Length: 267
Ligand code: NAI
Image 1 (cartoon, rainbow, N blue to C red):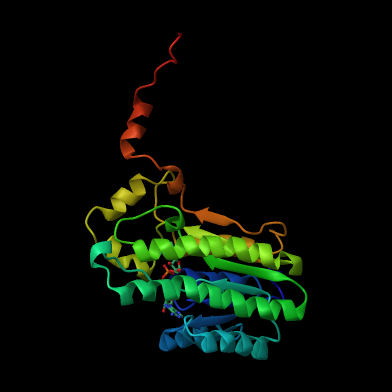
Image 2: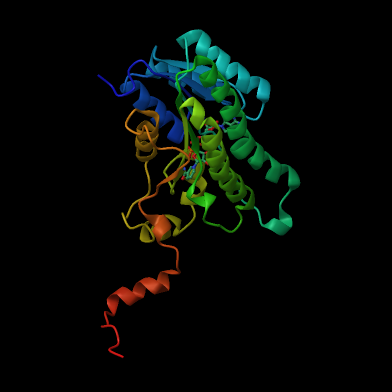
């Protein structure tokens, strides 16, 4: 018996990284999953490997016709929708003064508008079914923490966090829960280039209380919690899954104080 027995999920960005790990976990827990990705070859291959509980849909989350068709195809094949996971995302760095408008807009289109379109068409289906459901969005620790060079990405992810709250307000009356996940630095193809930078991994690990980078399955476990009946009264939240790195907000120098315990002054 799995915690998602009989449930149908649609996951975007499902051919790789966090989306793929979540698909695998959801299927293990009894769900049928419509795997959406713009990389048609990869999503076909990964869905075939997972088996008959998974279906590949190639499409672009920035295209409204594609997004409407994803939901329709999922319902046609699996009969319904219970869980939407808007997870597709891209990154890319550039300093503000040199940021090409087209690049900035592309990141906003995929990471923020793509989530809006997913929420729109998935919620329409859930409302029509009349039995509630769970919608999940992938934000980031960058929804609240600024990083140099990531103006588009950080702005998009902050937008995802707010879109999640507004959707939770609007959809609560239909018993549709909407939450976001804020992953910390997780080992996926998206972060491969950053991990090639000398000293990057060490710096990230050093700032992470749990002392390691994230794995895709760490994030998938939170998606499972939010998708399942284990979270019936959780909505509108941004759930960080980050090894604790977001509590480390001051410059590392402050942590040196730990080595110099001092009693409070008596006066
Ligand atoms: P990934 O690159 O392994 O997977 C992303 C998938 O999204 C790819 O298969 C890609 O083809 C697909 N995709 C990209 N644009 C698309 C579009 N327009 N339409 C449909 N599919 C599209 O990346 P990862 O790391 O699994 O990222 C998943 C999500 O997690 C993203 O939203 C990312 O911003 C977020 N995230 C990742 C973190 C990390 O450290 N890996 C940290 C915080 C957030």
